[in-house]
Image (cartoon, rainbow, N blue to C red; front, side):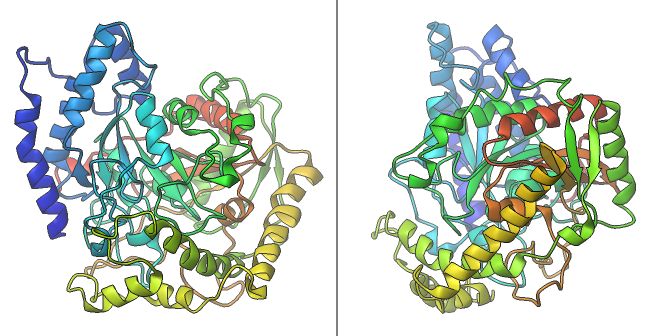
Length: 530
């Protein structure tokens, strides 16, 4: 928590110097303004990037106290914005994202800001280059505004799931600041919902984009593995990790994904991305649900008597737009969490070491998971939290282990062959629908929240099956769109499709969004105590 405060104070103090200019920028109101509108206002000259960036910074300073969603603001944010304004003035605007301020989850490398993953072991981890996703967005003209809080190491440390991180403290929900934002892109969800940036970028292994998007009233999409390169992102698993946009509208998410997608030779799994990426904004069609055949899952994790009416109302909207809905029998679903967990333990040990090898040994002393565990046992900030998940992962061997191969094969067979692929083939459908997850629950006084689904060894079938886990293991795209409130807290509607079906899913989500108008903006954070 102290590091978050010192980073923010230091950066805030420097802002007036960075923002001095001969002509004072006219104020720009950013609350609930879609990214697409910010883009249009920049293009028309209604505002400037400097004015928009200042407005977001002022909102963070004034309103983030009870949310803890932003860990640090880029010291050159206003300089980036001024450079964008000069490009526009000179008639050299890069494209629609030029000058649009975006926040990044603090496990994504961005030059000029430490990438901590919420851990004091990485507090001085200043990357030499941007992660590929940050590089692509910066190349598109985005203002890298700062870093968002997150569940430490994307929630993959302890089965107790302490809320967010030792560096950022606990992140809280703008709809009710006593409630969870869901993990692990907790700060990205809260910040995007509270209009602290035009949108945010999160990462996901199993639900960490779509869960906090749903819980914070956002649109979030986890793309096909690896439509978006994972280079430069603190990992859990090369088999399941992805980054994805978290925004207030489907159009905004589509704009970001268009810039993020593409092959990267440093991430070999992304080799096919260039052949499958698209202009996702051009694919949006408000009439796309007409004649669409969609599968309906029920009884998935998060379902309850409270969520069922909202889910049913969303299905009625889809039918009213011309969709044909086909119920998928509940018995075709099973809990795949334990197959997944074995794979993630093996992946994490190897993949984390590979990332740490790219960091500066002068700044980051831990080079392996074992080093990290030793650090946590002695550091005053880290030793108060358990690390059972680290211990489980450290006990694994390597990717040649039969246990790993068997678990990976079983998960893919059940999630793809006997899961999503079978449902699509047998029912002649193009996508699968589900409740994304239940509403965010209360955070306990000691700052702990229930695990968000991927860390705890349990008996097979001890928990309800989760649609998100099917998409995660398969590596298939998963889109969530706001569908209303349950007890004053947002819940989302999930659209899952086969590999490379992002354009179709976003178009379906757009048609649903335009018909339902289901998103409700948060207000509770404005009057909450800091």
